[in-house]
Image 1: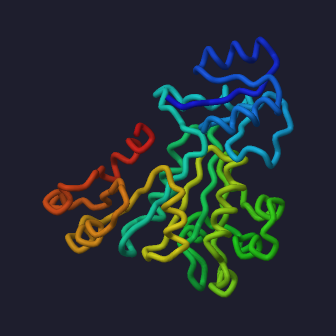
Image 2: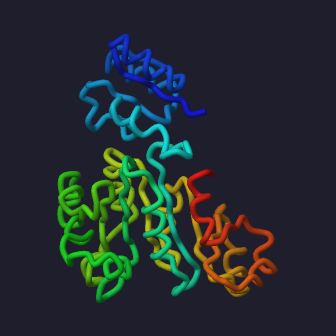
Length: 269
C-alpha cells in the first residue's frame, strides 16, 4: 500500500481522502515539510497550498480523487508511473507499442510521451503520429527551464502530450543525463504516466531513463539472437513479444513475457 501525505486543514477533505486510502495528514505546509523529512511519501496530496518547487511528487486533491482508478476494470494507476519501452534491435514494433500503450489508459489520465529515438530525418513516432516539425526536445535544450519544457510539448490529444525528437541529430548533440533527469522532474509535476520511446542502443542517456523507470519493457520479435542479448542485461524487464511465430516460447521461457495482444496486462501489474 502506498504511503501518502495529505496537506489540508479542511475536515471534509481529510475525511474524503482517508475514505479512499489511508494517509498521513499535515495541517500546514510547514508541518508537511517536517513530516517529509522523516518519511518517504509516494504521493503528496495538496489541498490548495503553494508547494511549487518543494515536492516533485505532489498532486492536487481534485486530481487525486479523480484519477484513483481507470474505467470499469478498476485498474489502479500509481502516481508518476514512468514506463520505458526499449528493444535490443530495430524493426520490432517498439514505437507502435508506445502508441498502443497511450491509447489503453483512461482519458482522465494525463500522459506524456518522451521520444528519445534520435535520428536525422525525424523519428518514427513523429511520422506515425504526423507531428509538426516544431516544437521538439532540441528547442527545449536551448533554455532548459521548466517554462521552456512545457512550452515545447505537443498536445496530441486532450490527455496526451508529446516531447518529440528533433529532425536532426545536431539539435541534441550536447544532451546529458542531467538534462534527462530534469525533464523527468518537470514532467512529474503535471503528468500521471510518462512513457519513454527509447532507441535500440545502450548509452548513459538510456541508462538514466532505465534507472528512473518504474516499469521497463523490451519489445522483441521473438528471435533467439534477441533472447541472448536480453539475457546479458542486469535489469528486470517485461518482454513484449511482437511476433505471430510461437517458437519464441522455446527461447524466452526464462523471461517474464506477454504477447503484444496481451499488452493491456501491463496496466494490471
